[in-house]
Image 1: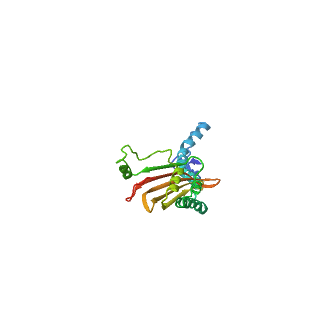
Image 2: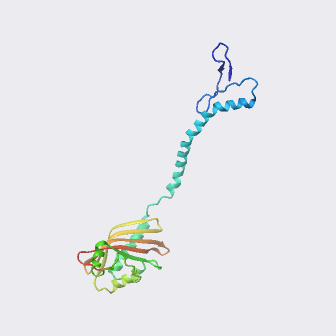
Image 3: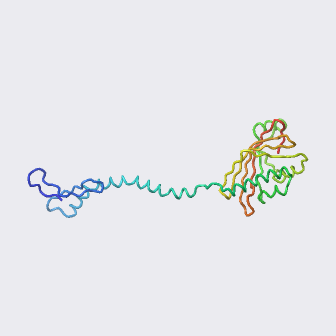
Length: 231
């Protein structure tokens, strides 16, 4: 409230002047006598608008930060969970059964590890392997897409080979959410005690009603020094 000053100086003095939420005093100038109530209200708004606008701008970053913090629990709940011990043990059991069925030439056991539908079964030659093959097959390519090359033909060749055949697994890595899984490892393929080739191998598995089953097998082929026999 402003009243006429009695002892000179400014024509008005402030008594109990209100302040804005930001702490700025709100100056209200008494309009000349005869101005409308609307004009007086407009004068008050013009002098008090700036402090309130400053408060609004300062609150925006705080609101954005609060919204981000509130969203964190929802995001964290969708993060991938560690593979359970049970699922890891089941997947490693598939790997061991794959290895053992090759050594024991057990076709039934080997086939049971795969999904009943189509299975991806594909290799890719390393540059060194491709260079060797092109010496006798000039038109050879890094990838050979042969519809007759399947997991079934693979195990048939193993069973019919009189020599001991073995595949080794090193540096096994498993990534899974409990329903699908990726398995990667370094392998060596050994026939008759001699390594024919080696490389990296990757599987895709699905957890079916019957348990974990292999849906895809891809591998790279690098020739060994001892031999250059294809898989």
